[in-house]
Length: 321
Ligand code: C5P
Image 1 (spheres, rainbow, N blue to C red):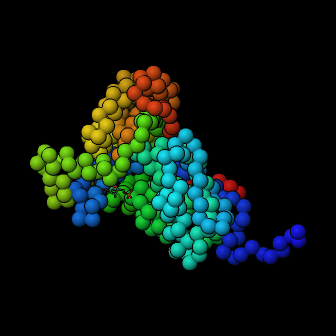
Image 2 (cartoon, protein in one colour):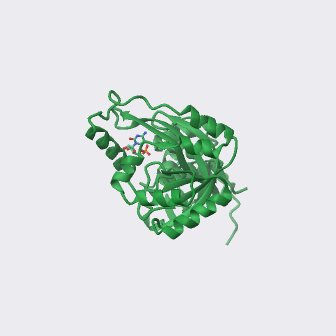
Image 3 (spheres, rainbow, N blue to C red):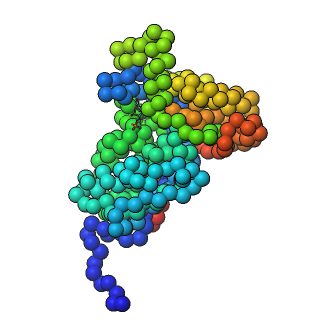
């Protein structure tokens, strides 16, 4: 066959696959305000990106297609409800092109685990497709697309450490003074984020305090926590971590209390539910202590898998040349 000498379409200057690598997150502070009229909750959300990653590879295709590999792959939708597919559709629409791309997701972040795995895939799809299509979307536009896709997606793009206000999408980057060592206990099965927020509201209403923005004080970041992040002091950070969704996650999944206890018994400086759960996060003094906590958790039989990871980690990054 004659070789194709046509120049590549100006809208598709890259024909070889583009891969993006995106980190998971843990919330070191998750202060949840009252339910807003739009159903979301105002947050003071201090994110830390950690070195557990998904990869998203974008390849030109006849039409939009999603494939997934990894232990949790059977639990990830491959239709257009997948957040990575929605990201490709949104980016293509923004530039008036067709989202004809094959997105292959290599999944290492626990699915529905409270570690922003779906958000990571959306941010990864955005930067991979932007490079594949040569659409050169500005950082500001990418952040706006991220915010439309989900509250945690902007943070997956920027990584590092950041304070999220609003529903978590309004980010202020934070400087960190060191590396924090974490252990993650991955549970069997996920928890639905909306269900955990609903349970948080229900528990608040049960106490008679009310659950709306008129009832609940505005969430504020902890000065002690921001200082601990800034100085890189794990003991000070451990003393300051909080998660307002933890009672709700424990209410829906009481067995998590045993996981939290097992990590604490194993020497963790702090034990908390990660975001909306059910993954539990344990802060350790250093890498060696993290190994000890991981060993204790694995021996406890209170979780499916144990992972160690440190943070901060960089946000969504294209890794192909
Ligand atoms: O923004 P995202 O799509 O990730 O949110 C999923 C769900 O989590 C929302 O529909 C809402 O029920 C809940 N949520 C919330 N307040 C936030 C973020 C999420 O109530 N700040």
